[in-house]
Image (cartoon, rainbow, N blue to C red):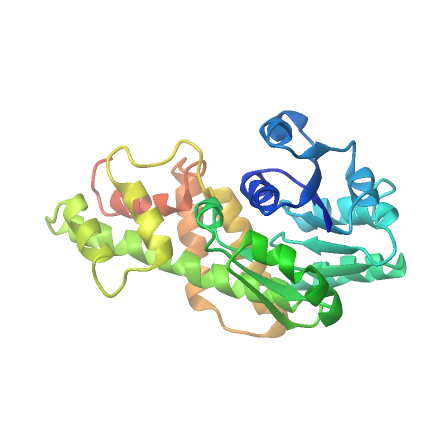
Length: 294
């Protein structure tokens, strides 16, 4: 199967090498070509736009910042739907609102093609380790056809139901992830304020019943000098997901009080000028609120 990939940011940059390593022929495009040069050097073919990527592919993936970008890439004059051959499948891995995903899928269907929402649960770290999982919403037969490609990206690919269901489930997972990481920072700050050394508190938590995969790789970021220069997901990006959660909950009438609290901590981080750091920096916001020096 010939595979296309549109959007070669932090996630695309680690997904494409896995597809190449699995033997797939991959054609890609990114708005900023310089970001794609390492992938071209690794064997990815370059195309001049989403339509050109799709015209030579049987399955095209996208992973983009928001629904507006997905809509433009999928349905624009130079978009995927205009270039995808009959029987081709467009899989959007972006974290966007379920209704927006369904609307775009309907537009792709109107063009005679199939779209699946296929968000990936994992960070660049978990993708590189082969531990990411993919949820898929939409046509079951199309899912079965592309499942081998999905399993080249992550260890698990699960069909969860109709169009938009995977996008909704991804928001629910990100809600839990965000609360967990922020609660970790709150707990460490509490221990520090009481006199426990930060490195001792972090080690104890990561060896306790609260340990988890995400805390395992993100928790050490809060140690002295541990914050990565390039965040896995900065405060602004993570808050984008949380605002999607809050809007979905408002629309369907679901109480999400912990999501609201987590969102307020992201506001605090932004107010303190910490927004360009990985969102685990909420720990530093708690320290400052508790009167501890930076």
